[in-house]
Image (cartoon, rainbow, N blue to C red; front, side):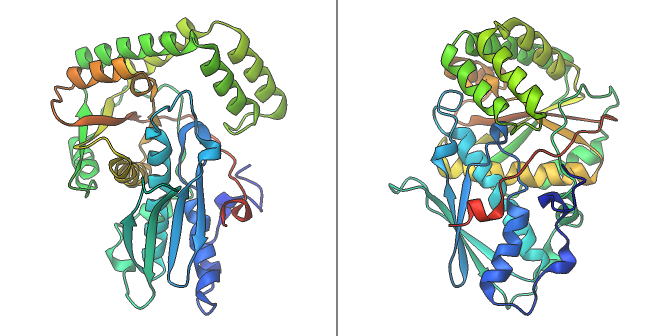
Length: 332
């Protein structure tokens, strides 16, 4: 899909409507927001354009109620879209300030206020904007090349949220321990018919990028076959053999913390993309409450909580971009 002229991934910054009303400019910025990653590529976001701001909503019709019972991944995904919007705004000269408003009884997650009079493009970290149309999740095994220490330092430094911390794990024994947790989480989830049905639904929609035929074959296989052991072994191996595992940790475990963790994750993946480093979230250990607690213990966490687990490394395999909902579908 990414080779099609009408693909959302082919957005051209030269087409920014500099002399158009704010609404047209805001819609252009949202073309970058919708390129954000999300759990199962569910894209659980909606937007409403106001005279000088954009409201960002969590679209609960696309919430993974079984895999993501506490909405952790829902708000992480929305946070990724907010960060793309902020970076795009900076590119085109807007100063963006963000008010977080989750949990007030409706689905409004945040308001992004945009000031067109501030020249902020120079403040954006070089390479992040350009990486938005290149970024993709790479599910293949990664090469055994280590990630240089200075690159890891730059990844740590891009986490600006004071309540979010990036933990980097490269010790073999700790990766193996996390791999064992991953295996157990996969087995637990695939034992649940409701989980298999939900996963099968998203595979069947083609949201993960498969062809029409393969999407339906995948849906049938996931829904009706016992794949827990196979998936557990595969995912455990991916974790154990990755050069680096990374975990985003927050001080609190509320929706605002998840939005901030999502923003941090998207910024990190864009920087990783600009450095030629692949990324792949592996969330199952965080989707099973007791295994999430075991992961926290493995990481030595006491008061803080793990929000997002992913692997980083180098890969020569080419991943296709996944489909995106049309902009008209997500703008209220």
